[in-house]
Image 1 (tube, rainbow, N blue to C red):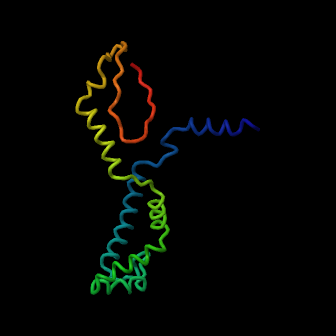
Image 2: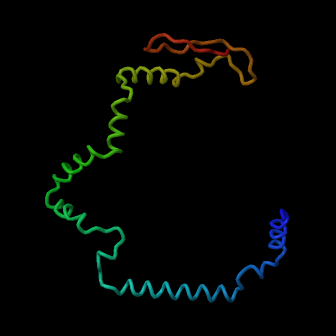
Image 3: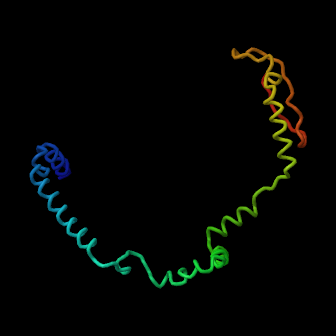
Length: 155
């Protein structure tokens, strides 16, 4: 009895493709019938009078308050602020900004200046090194403005 599913699979694979699939003429006829149905639907939709109730997910009552915003653009800002305060995504963004690390602009400028010094004369800091891996001479990087740190050099 355990062989029955195996025989069924082998039988399905052994059947010629034309016996299992639709003929070309039948497929063409099926396609034409589907096109006729869609054409009738499209014609009736195009010739029907405009009706907001036919629009999916459209709620005319839901936009009543928005229609007057064009007359009072300042109300857009006040409405958006009040909506943002209760919006989950906006609250998550605000909380993220509150926890973000803060850096003094002078610290950032010092790091950029140090990187600029290395960029202006890169060979001063890579002298004696060869592609083949030969020993070079270590050259200290320009001093930073932060507290002293340790780095490993392979030269």
